[in-house]
Length: 182
Length: 267
Image 1 (cartoon, rainbow over the protein chains, first blue to last red):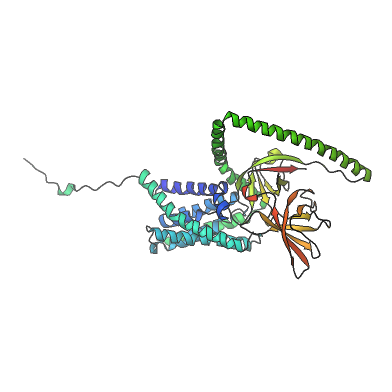
Image 2 (tube, rainbow over the protein chains, first blue to last red):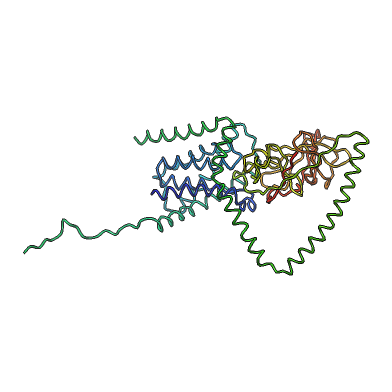
């Protein structure tokens, strides 16, 4: 992953968290807000190294918790854990296929809220949970699954537009040059 | 080498998370403020962007329509002035009666209006952020309402903004009273995670006779919410715990899902 791509992932995490807090559209219509951080973790786990993955988990988690009633830092571990597992198995994932991206997005978007809620319950926090939470979980899973291939396509487009073009190889080879002498 | 790097990353992230979770609440509040302030520029931009279409619509509105609107507002203003006069007379009468019986005087509410700028991005909390903070005199536990009824209370304060925990969140429990002859008391809880228009009034006595349509107001018990703030109306009720207590569903007066402007009640 290039430097500009890495920067773009962090900016996307910042914008995603802000969008979740400031734009209540999905919550208004579907009763739940879609979380885009797991989808970003999938992209980073499949394209970047462990350092970038860790940084995204820490930054994304802190962004999320700063605007939420969550205890500060509670979102870091679930994001990192999901990213780390995908990172470890990434050789087995056909990362260029939209279906694989969709499936990974669904798994990550289902696992992150589940792990976060488990952590919060372990910490003894009283949460707003009932049967409606299952609906919210389904919306988050489906939303994250749909968002993942779109994110991949968006990053690919960005790389295509702003990245360096691959220079076509020339057939000229200096060691095969015929030198003519008088 | 690869494995060592893996262990390092896992250890560093876990350590960072555990360290942050074990910090004292005062320190985490400051850290939250520091990280949250990164979103302030975007917040301002969103506010401006939301204002732009409204400004554009103002430019396009015909003069005739504006004049009609002014006439309507003038009529409404006159009606409200008459109502205010009646209310003032009633307040004087109330004060005289209170003096007669030597009851404690009610202090009038001082209300400051605030805009709702953000909502909790997590689905398991029900909070909003408003654009009034400690610089405007906001402190923890101040009641927050709209013209339609109670919304919640202030749960965290920063210099320029504050967090309001809404009715239905596990951290916002309200002691409420049904406006019936028995003045039955109960505690407000969430009715569900998805529907924000309903709440549950629990811990009502087993003998309580609750009828649909009866109004529910704050009881004033608990010391956070003053008595008499409208909360909503009873939808239905049912006995629970083998008839030992009664639970009622309430249609909240304020729509918590579409809050844009709220009032903070200062004491």
